[in-house]
Amino acid sequence: MVTLSEAAEHMGVSIDAVRRMQRAGSIPSERHVTPKGFRWMVAIDGPRADAPASRPAGPFVPPARVPKDGSPLSPAVTDTTTLDAIRADHLREVDGLRRDHAQVLSSLEQLIATLHTQHSLAINALGAGLEALRSDQAETIRRLEDAHRAVLDVTVASTTREIDALHRSLLEANAWDSRPWWRWILGLPPARARL
Image 1 (tube, rainbow, N blue to C red):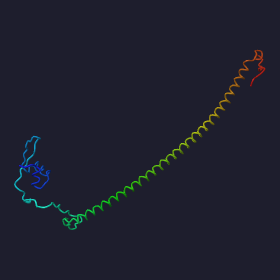
Image 2 (tube, rainbow, N blue to C red):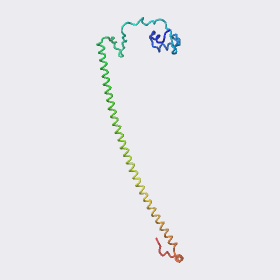
Image 3 (cartoon, one colour):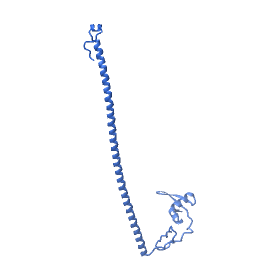
Image 4 (cartoon, one colour):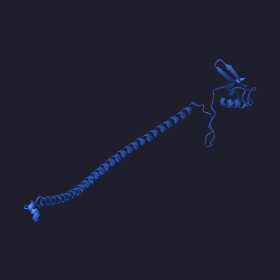
């Protein structure tokens, strides 16, 4: 019985793959209690058939990556000069990316400045339009007030004339009623009729 990590190393798979096999029941497993909780142990059979007997001696050389375009694999790099050339290529590439980044940043800053200017112009135009609208509204209110005042003046003049006519009629009626008795009997008008 070995731990999950040992089983993963022995079988050449990830620990998650061993856990999935253990949960599926494809490999025997036991739960061992430890002072910190419990640990799963799995059973493995002897050495793996396709695993090498021992690790090759010497420095680790990573496997070559297969290019996406299907070109042949490059040989493993061991020469210091070649490493320096690759490093220089990478540095040039990084410098190019930095220049591209700076250009994009500059373009974005110009775009932001242009948008800010357009925003300011739009706000100014809206302010001018609002001011013109307020001016038109004030002019309309002034015209309505003038028209209302003219109608009110005509109405007041007409009403004043009617009141004056009624007042004269009332005075005339009062004058006839205030005649002395003898003028009243004789049917004579008052001596001083106020018309």
